[in-house]
Length: 196
Image 1 (cartoon, rainbow, N blue to C red):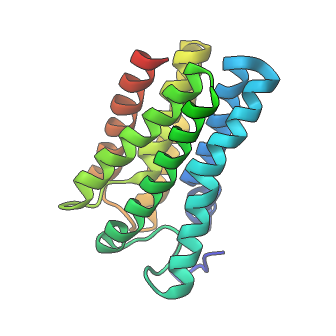
Image 2: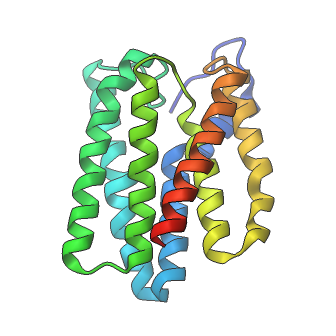
């Protein structure tokens, strides 16, 4: 749990922590799994969530405990350059295993979208601190809209609220949350749209 500083907004902290990338990854994995193959697809969703959300969370906690980065949000850009490659390894392993085990195409498209977005974030992070929170949430909304219908784009105000929380906590600038939103929606949407 992240402790509030005296000047921090409690609502912003609750939003940042409650709607963090891991939670979006779990939700979108289960929902796309359901869309792909109902209950069997949910099983694939759990599998995807383990490699795209669960193992990366353990990696983040390990790095935090070892002092590689300060907290689970890895606020310093240079910390993310250590953290993100570890997450990439987990996601690649997940997608390889899913392909080998015969996962539905839509689930492979989901994880490929996550991987593509993660690689784009890593490339940008070498020079600038883009918002992972808004990239993941925007990408999730777009992929859900592609799977279930455009009415789910109505979830985009949640992405804006997440962006507000990141700026209010001074973890990102407005430009960084806007860039994260654009990157996540574009990259995840394009890859999922082509593969799914």
